[in-house]
Length: 377
Image 1 (tube, rainbow, N blue to C red):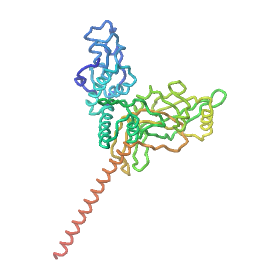
Image 2: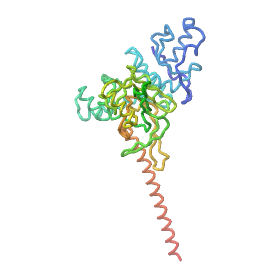
Image 3: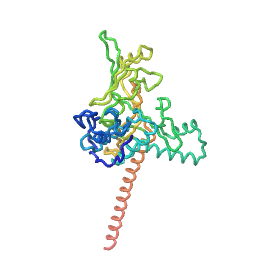
Image 4: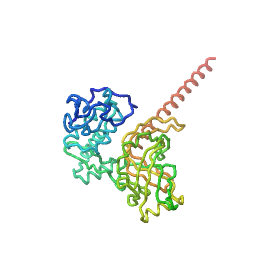
């Protein structure tokens, strides 16, 4: 069951810290000792309960309200949205849970990711109909990817798209790669033999210029990977899915977050690829790291650099893989990122040209006034 009237509660400050509340934060009593009214009150801090009131506190899913005062917490809403696909919800309740969280997004003047996807899906369908494209799943999926859309878990009217996460070979145009200019290191065992690799796949709060036809400055914000820690992340060599050297699901790799950024640690297999990568890193031939990702949430502003480059703050991502890499830099960006950078750059250039034209017109008028005065004497 989904609580009703989600926007009747207050809104906590946007930067309010968030952590999953425990029963102790709501009451010193056990769940069984609480009254039905108190159990219902606590349940309204969550997006889903199998019954109302639930049998146990652990039955509650997707918290996003402060225990004290019940204000909605933005980071809690984002965390709940990020865990939707990992939460066992009845199929007939998924739409209601999404609608509940989408209302909270609107409280903070934001649009839920799945609603943005649905809007774009409608635009795509209109374009498809205008072209007279026949509805066939495989052909439509290919056309969908060709237009730079990533297949997402969205259902609209009678049409449901594939929810599987694309692998490296089939990623859409929204997938991006970034290189970190911080070396990957080989760790040795007691015998001095290299057995593990570790490094930073991403660093926080460090402006980096992403090149291309529409360059921009990018900053990975702290918290961008918070929702990715529970994902099944692969460690690849050079982002090649055929060169797998570790995986968090199997326990051969791990990712963690510290004050610097996203760190990974992997024990490569005793295979030709694993041995080669260890040897290349130990010799210094491979000295960088990279990560493949899709941006789920970002903000763009005009730049304050001498070149007036747009600045992109990446706030939340879906992480595909981390990789030791041989290439000196990865600056592959999505269609959306290039379009956003181009739009902001065009606006800055237009204002600069307008200012230049205005100054030139002012100078022309000054010259005409001076000439008129000169001919009067």
